[in-house]
Image (cartoon, rainbow, N blue to C red; front, side, top):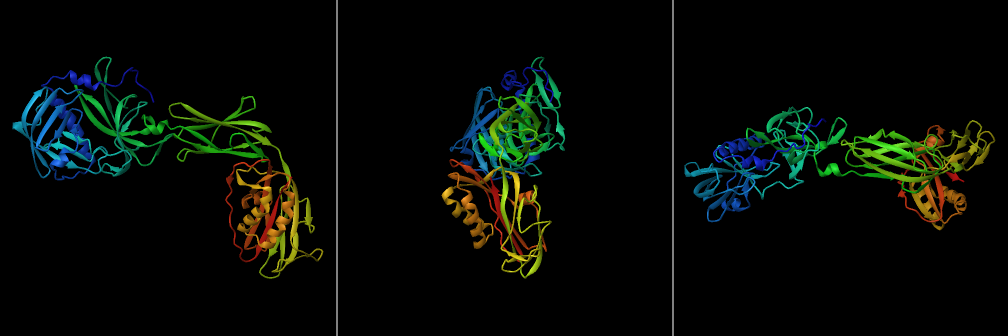
Length: 555
């Protein structure tokens, strides 16, 4: 947004009032108060609640020009308080319903006797639970003066419904703030609402000017913000309901409007952090041709960038992250070992770019290791509900290197309810169908389990039961795999998902089974335990014609 070429855009309210003489102050106060009351009458539905002395004595009643204190002996004291106390008024009061009758005793100093026409004036006590500024206030009889109660200001964080549209908002505690850029003001929280002109005094030549936006650096009071953030162009932020000041002739008036939060000096806009959830710094990653970098970011940046640096710290690639959810503050980027990464040290630098052009960055260094193995001893059990002929086809990416019985173009077998399998080509009986495939990279383990070598049998018995294997299948599994996992004191274990198995080794069984359980794991030997996010395993219940397969990666 273009800024006006002005060194100081804020006008000085105290100086303005110092230049006012006593006789024209009444006019200034009428203008100021009428504007404030217009905000109240047009935006809120208030009730006329009965007042009493305890209510009036509870706190101070004031605006930027006047303050009132009420006492138990039915007297009051008021000060003219614009910038400093320059005048004092004392008097008596009495209460009838929601009306407070004021009568003057004496006054001194520079004080405008606006409240006591014919030595008596009437205040009305109002209570408005929907007001985002203060729930209690006083107005004079014709509604041109408003005095706020300092004990009734709405606490920051309170849920409020603002305006005739009952816009869901959160009160901000009358927070003092300022604009960080020229920003338009609107009649409602959204770009579909009409925008308003902003009037300011140019301090260089003392001229009053009008501009289409509130100027950068203008002081404002934040009354409330929308409960939800909204998308405006490339930004994602709350709309704020604010109170600001404008000059009128030689005086100052108060106005309210909506501003988009991207250009307001609020705490939310200063919370700018990046968290890289994966990979972690100094991670050692084995195998996997693709690596997914993912994390979270705060402050709703307009753009996310990823840089890859080599071991010397040189940037070898830089791309904008397309998979960035500004509303949720999440990002994800897939790095390919073939195109971007290389074996050894890699540094990933994530950069968030904000609307004010400022940047925040976070980087991690990780190490890639090549590791190939074979899909070892996957075995397939068949449990039809009645004896039947079954065709089984499995198509691993690198083909089948070993199979029992001979695979050919698929197994054509007869299976019974006890799981006995007769291969139709050689008429031999088998307990399961066996296959292997070579030259597969190890999985990228973002989740999993770290298990002591001595506890592997107990671990597999527990997890395999959750995933649906029966006692015989679990026994077959541990009998084969426990002796294989004996080289390191700890092992990191990861179980393939069904989706991953279908990617690396699609399985087709005809006729189609009712239940398919495929358990396949990868492992990495460790010299010491490490921390990893626990993997969530899916529990499967058997029903009808059931096919079970288990296997793992062997290096």
